[in-house]
Every structure is written in C-alpha cells, then in structure tokens.
Picture 1 (cartoon, each protein chain N blue to C red):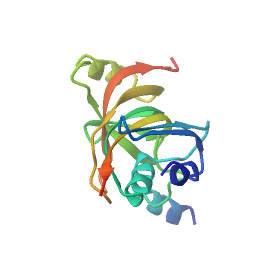
Picture 2: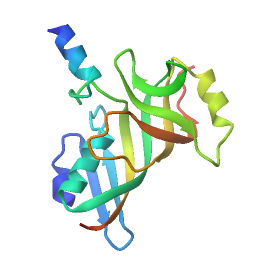
Picture 3: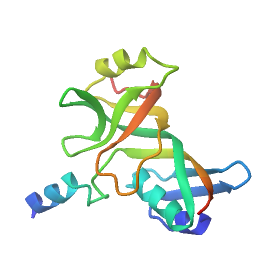
Picture 4: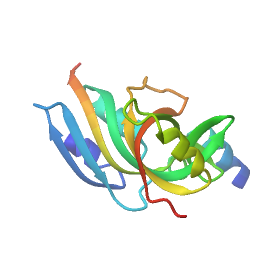
Length: 33
Length: 130
C-alpha cells in the first residue's frame, strides 16, 4: 500500500502528498480560446 | 472561472480581473493545491495560463545537482532557479538546503500535462527555520 502511494506520488498522481504548499498565486491569463 | 477555481479544495479566495488578465488566489493553511491543478481549471474555462507569481512553502533540497522545493523525501514540486533581479539568491538557497522556507518567485508558462516539475524563479526567501 505504502509503496503504491509512493509510486503514484512519484508519478505526480497524488496531489495530496505531492508538492510544496502554495500560499498565494497571481496567475496571468490570456484571452478566451 | 472564479467558481471553477473556488471549488478546488484548499482555496481560500479567488479574485478574477479580466481587464488586467490576472487571477489572484489565496490558499488555506495545509492545502494540497498544485499550480498544475489551478492551470488545468483555468484552461478548462477557455483561458490560457501564462506566467504566475507564487508564494510557496517547502523544503529546499538538492535533486541530482539541481536545487528544488519539495515535501521532504517525496516529490519535487518546483525546480529552483534565480529570478533575473535576484541573482545572489542561489547562494542563499544552497545555505538553507534541508530547511523549510517560504519562497516568492515567478513560474513561467508550462505546457498542459507537463511531467517535469515547473521552474520557480526565486526572488525572495523568508521563514527559514534555523
């Protein structure tokens, strides 16, 4: 189980344990497609 | 788009300014939000996410010779580089390897579905634990 979760994390498929914690995002966006 | 982003777990507030072309998102403590997830939600609403300015907390580590920001031992969230206005910050980042820090910086546009960690161009460093 643990190994499976770690494998998924390495593949970036488990956002709950993947990645540093973001506090604020100012995201520039461009027009409508 | 505001509703779509607001519905993501861990979002505290969302402000959308179409005139300025920017979405400002504040996140709750202990959130598990990823920038890729935010960008996907924006794309699904017909917009193209470009560069972002972010404030992120994590552990600075050495990932095969590259500085990275990560949850300890699990996953590289961002590769770290210096912002063009903060060239000396790389030395500071090397000094805080293994520590939890807060980093302000820019994340350039990324391709949809990119598997590589995005690059965070660090401009300021704060909240070192030692």
